[in-house]
Length: 423
Image (cartoon, rainbow, N blue to C red; front, side):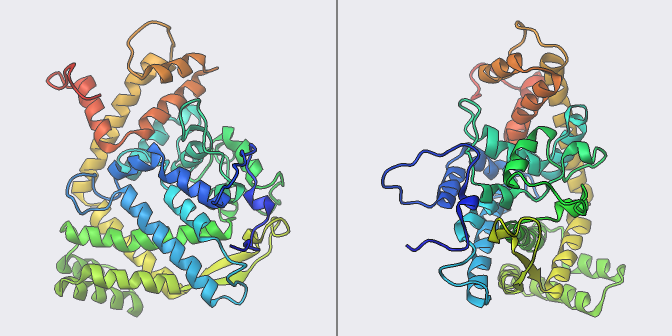
């Protein structure tokens, strides 16, 4: 297979040298992908909330199925761009394995109970540097993916850049509720940028976070496509969205003719019981709505990954925004899901509180063993409260929904648990 001229050694470089194996048949990007797929962090996504709590029914999406769908859309966008763009060909193209890796890993850092869990952990970790899903993904890839020895997977620079949707450090926007990196991750951010400083016009926050490689832009649009369509489908199957509610909702909005036509399209799909087929067809339209356009920035001389931008058809972008608004207001803000969000906040707050008292505020060599011995050992060796809090937060964030429920009940429910439980 000829080398892909789109990439150079700058893109393949890793922070620590990788061993070279005789007869290695995989590209560096394929190695990245394979390490993600065979990790426990990836497997845990099968039991983490996408919209509805995992396990409620057997057909709702989880973080795992969502990530697989995003990866398929991302690979298809790569194929579409190679076929359509005058700037690409079979020997100089955006690597679909790299994009697949970014898509498969983009939600690794999400805690149990979806965005509700992320908001709660951000509040709880506020004194210790905050919690952010994308920052936690970076932490997993670079530090904790293979926990034996506290090592990450030593990802390529291109994968790090493909995953990093946000490049602002927490200390630069201390009031932000999300969209930041942990301060201690500056080392990996610096490596991702090849040691180059941000130009003055890319100020911390929105402007800097909008600076993304072409693979990151593809991943982000694939993610938008998947959840703007599939969250709607799950909401319809669950009964939160039906024709009457959509029509009533639309009547309370000031919709354009295009948006009104899309609502009618969704209503027709529900009436004809063809939701999956109709929405799957829209995925293809979202893929074909992409276009590659030249771009220039401070990394353009270092890599082709920053020589292009992904242009999205405004009609499709507006449709995705409409679908996300429908899902938010008819599903996520419904009393049923808000009650579950409240329960998630309560459970995580109590779990964190117990561990904070035991391991963060004061650390004693003897006492209740509430965490695995390997984690306790790391906490004892941590230099300060913030480092101890981050290790406690790692353990909670890694939990699946069900494990968080079981741990809560084991700690606080007098009628639950025995020495014969599977731990």
